[in-house]
Image (cartoon, rainbow over the protein chains, first blue to last red):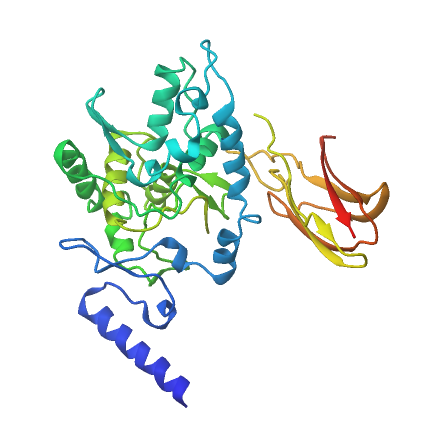
Length: 276
Length: 108
């Protein structure tokens, strides 16, 4: 009796919220979630990692450091860190030494402003920038095993730390561009990121919508059966609305990534995460 | 790029007669043979077809694996240990590649 009435109460609450303007309809499923308060002026009323929207089995897979398939790439990253590459015979370790101390906090603050280049770089771009300039080695392709592994390995050093991407100062115009893109309708289906991701907790056809946060990327996506980058997922989103996706590493995707970093302020860096 | 080492989870010590759980995880695409590339051609099957485990050279666990098993296969099994020794794990795939790992266990 008590259980039925609480389900009805939750359903009533979600109906009211849905009627009120098409935002959150989390109801009973979010009882034990890690819901963070949103800062003043934030686009969301609360901040929730994609982790919480997944099934208990998927969460368990992410939480088990042995079984988490993303750890296979993390270990490759650790090996690559020590591996010399390029004519100068340097490895990441040659300059940065111990990753655990040198890279601590890095994964939580990217994309970051690069003074010398006069533009923001995201983590993949920073890694390739180091490779090309410091090591004179060839940059790795965006979705290559090497870049995915190294990006995950670097993010791993910030595991659990709160996302904190700078959006003011020189970053402001890029942040604003990202915010504009996030709210722009694209493609044949004429949909913007916000059309789905402001309705987290609801379903679009069979997809259970999350807030579309970036704190878990690169992620081991069960659909891909391997690690994939944030730009890959965003490409997929654009494909889903029948739009021509922006390219990996494009100014548009980096701007979006900056905006997503702000959207996820305070979320723990999850590396490697597991998603659908 | 180098295949990452297979992951093995196994306790380092055990008491005689204890049942230990062995967990294994290996990085492998496990191409099923049913997928098509963007030109519509079938991508050929390339999966790990056999996993075997020996303890002090005695076979103790073996299984045939097919394309129904997803990428980066996770296998878990239990073994009753009576003496100290070395576990040897072998994965073989359709291309003839062989991946191996070894772990020692001290049994008191």
